[in-house]
Length: 296
Ligand SMILES: NC(=O)c1ccc[n+]([C@@H]2O[C@H](COP(=O)([O-])OP(=O)(O)OC[C@H]3O[C@@H](n4cnc5c(N)ncnc54)[C@H](O)[C@@H]3O)[C@@H](O)[C@H]2O)c1
Image (cartoon, rainbow, N blue to C red):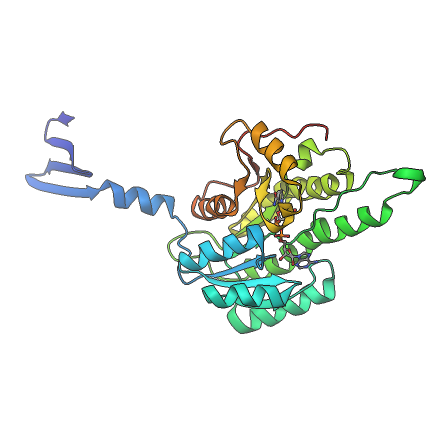
């Protein structure tokens, strides 16, 4: 483009502007890629505190591996601290024992960790259980105990870790060069939408996790904290190891593409992508290869 006395052209990622004004010539050379990167203000996890609940196994462990490989300082919060310690030692992560369903346990774990390493920049909530039971079982046996336990661990546990960690996160400085203080990623399940027979408790707990994503994002947005939820399909983890081979093969074969169970690394990849992308907020992402669960 050119007007009298003005020239503007682009070349190898630069915009060059030359302008003549009052017999003076002004030149600007702007590196567009640098400019765009600065405008996007992508969060870099290197050197930041990353907390992962349920990080001793499965999806959480894959996240712990991914975020340590990316340079984050990872703390695993898990009830099974013995198993978690074995895994954490291999990747240089720390472990804190916690029962996410118990508020005094969460408060003590969070306060001690903040006192030691500061507030988290990222919280990934993966702690959870996958019990199945009919609402009215054989001979009229009700499954209220399964329902209560599942809601306590999956839903209330996620809420407790989110709220206690967020209090510390909201008070910390924004990441250098960004307006972001942190990112919270909770784990639902595709069962929040297509719960199968026997999944009333599990689906209700994951529906709660999915539903609180938007109000949490709305509340924390003013502080520069994003909240996202991942709803995985069926993944290869110890939680699904117990399924008979024929059931796993049948489910895998029904998944449009790729026709297999998800890999924990694919969950961790999405978690890392959520952390990086500043415009992902307040929504639930199904990570499922287009799987839609059948009735049973
Ligand atoms: N694997 C799947 O196919 C799948 C699918 C959808 C959703 N999910 C969800 O993903 C999350 C992780 O599942 P996973 O497959 O990695 O399971 P997993 O069993 O491999 O790991 C769960 C971890 O949570 C910990 N945990 C359980 N109860 C806890 C408590 N009260 N306090 C602290 N830690 C506790 C366990 O010790 C374990 O380390 C769960 O919330 C699960 O519901 C899994």
